[in-house]
Image (tube, rainbow, N blue to C red; front, side):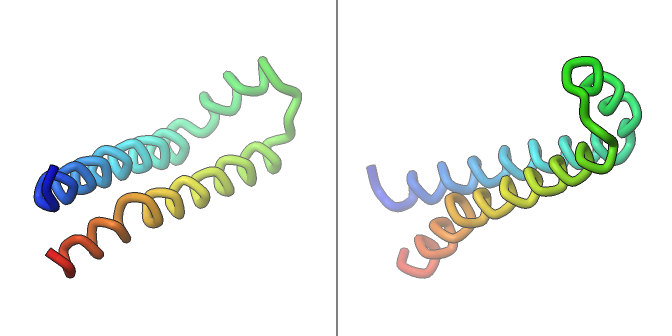
Length: 80
């Protein structure tokens, strides 16, 4: 496996993960009440904690995308 293949895989991982992230954000922003109703049936959670949890998890997911997809991709572009 050469650097070009690894760079291509990292780029596709970045695109797919950002698509998942944007889908999650859009669904959370546009269908917040529906999402909260579904989750509040399973868990007794106030809306403020629900929002804070989703916001924190989106932040963690974004950091993971940057650390494990974007940074290695940029490093391989610089090296290669």
